[in-house]
Amino acid sequence: MRILVVEDEKRIADFLCRGLQGAGYAVDAAGTGAAALENIHSADYDLVVLDLMLPDMDGLEVLENIRSKRVGPPVLILSARGGLDDRVNGLEQGADDYLTKPFAFVELLARVRALLRRGQPAPERLQVGDLVLDCIRRKVSRGAETIELAPKEFGILEYMMRNHGRPLSRTMIVEHVWDMDYDGLTNIVDVYIRHLRSKIDDRFALKLIQTVRGIGYMIEAPDKPAERPADAATQA
Image (cartoon, rainbow, N blue to C red; front, side, top):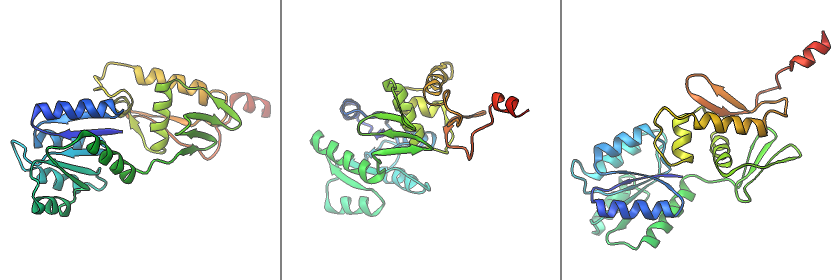
């Protein structure tokens, strides 16, 4: 899960980022409304934690922009504006929750988890074709065969299966699985995709991991397996 923290006070931003990262989330930070909008338009976020008093614009303008997207992430407003009118206005403008400063981090974390559960229901079991991934037990199987995956391999496969049929760029995969910026030079995604293919595709006629030229990769179950050269030779 990837979260954007929009907060201009560096001490609070650092505190939030460290706490959320410690809870297992990938976190980006933006100190201005303009930076927040740039991030929102260039990456997919599962949640936005939004301060209202930003140096260049009111946070409600950022909220309005998020809500203009066809599918936008849940938004948790975190603000020193604690009046009843402020809270009501924020919620009416499209925020999913409103927490006032000062706040207890344990409460913020509980609200974050609640919004993530509400905003993106996470099924316990994902399936593409005969490939099954158990999100809770962290087990993978294809047909009757159990497949052992390393943690990063599991993370990539889970992300791809949650977005099955959708092309994912190398940048998107790196940012969601490694929590780092993609510098355009590393071939780490291609290496891990080769590992995954050797485990879940190579021994099976039906290939699930597809290369999308010029974009990256996606996972989907084709209508039927491609004919193998050996089969073709036998028929000839």
